[in-house]
Length: 334
Ligand SMILES: Nc1ncnc2c1ncn2[C@@H]1O[C@H](COP(=O)(O)OP(=O)(O)O)[C@@H](O)[C@H]1O
Ligand SMILES: [Mg+2]
Image 1 (cartoon, rainbow, N blue to C red):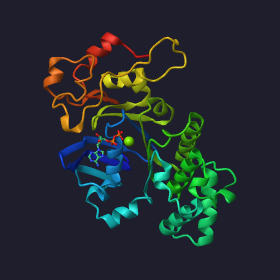
Image 2 (tube, rainbow, N blue to C red):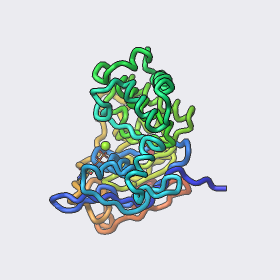
Image 3 (cartoon, rainbow, N blue to C red):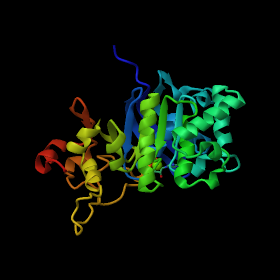
């Protein structure tokens, strides 16, 4: 019997209504996450990763005139149709989100202990004493040393890595079924980054929590994700299991991203590959293939028609007319 996916996003589009007109930051995105799965979303800055992930919980509508199309089914119920009070019960209870900048989510006037305890009392109805014990346990789980002392610290008293751990502790306080991690390690140095990734995998294994891991760094994806979606200009352009993405990337954009990963064994004089050009502005989206303005393999067809999402095989989909020829011509990237 097929299990119901934990999250099923169907044809999600997110439109901002700006003074200069409407822009579509997320266009027709579909994917599913099963219980306990770690899925990666990658793409350069400005490709719509954050808007897409925040659309799932409708976080942006507090500040921006916005509208959605499509469905975001969480355990079968459409979050886009829920009244806000119902959605608030899901946020932080069933789905938690962590951001790149921990200080934007931590409250500077409360100790980290109080912030975790508040979540536990509100969402899990624990007594003060139980909540404190659980808060210490969570800080310990996230690898914060001397949690009994640290619980009394204010955010500014912690290092960046510790703040990120504290934010993860808050996000985990309710044992969410899904953690959305939006570039949680981008602002950290590599050692701390590795520790936070390890922590996320450990918690995923211990609690069976699914993770939607968003990053611009393909290297990070290869370490923790079972499958990956590549986003470009608001759309998913390639999706497959992580191994295939690195072994046989099919979209020219993905090839470019992989070639841009710095390699330890690279010749010192070798220049790091960069993808030519920049992500076009949302007010100027090509009506054909969205990557056509930057693609080294572009043809007239790409400049006139939008490619469909093509099923290259059971586990691999790509939005490119020419993926077969490119693969035959260029072979593997590694
Ligand atoms: N409030 C907003 N109003 C209009 N456009 C926005 C707003 N927020 C984000 N965008 C646009 O949406 C696009 C995607 O942004 P974002 O999701 O933050 O990219 P990423 O997370 O992949 O770097 C960008 O072009 C950005 O300028
Ligand atoms: Mg972002």
